[in-house]
Image (cartoon, rainbow, N blue to C red; front, side):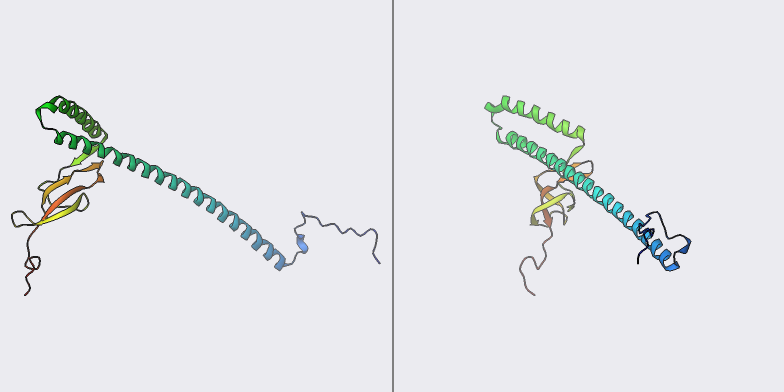
Length: 180
């Protein structure tokens, strides 16, 4: 039979006291270490997620800035085409206005750090030039830029748009179609 004075409640603050077995103490210590390790891993995971979110936001901002910078360059191209198209005397006043606006635009971009790539006569560099055509000739050194189709632009040392160019290549017997 059960004694009525026997208390069955469990004390949550009871850590087993001095009567706890060594195995129970080891299990309790391992459990506490595992809990601490899990808490650290959860905190690390949260930090990594926050870092990832910040990096994604930074990359999105960078991508948008580059797109805005690239969008400004075709404006210069448009002005250059307009200026080249109307060389007749009746367009002279129009032309002077366009030249003034064009010069102000180019000067403002230069103040911001945008530089035009002027590669004519230089050696081809795949980092700042895009070869659109090649011409077999011995009149120029191999790899020399013969013509610029569209100028390139650099912003603080970083290529915004490569210059589109025609490159000289030396004629070789294989390129002339001769078979030995």
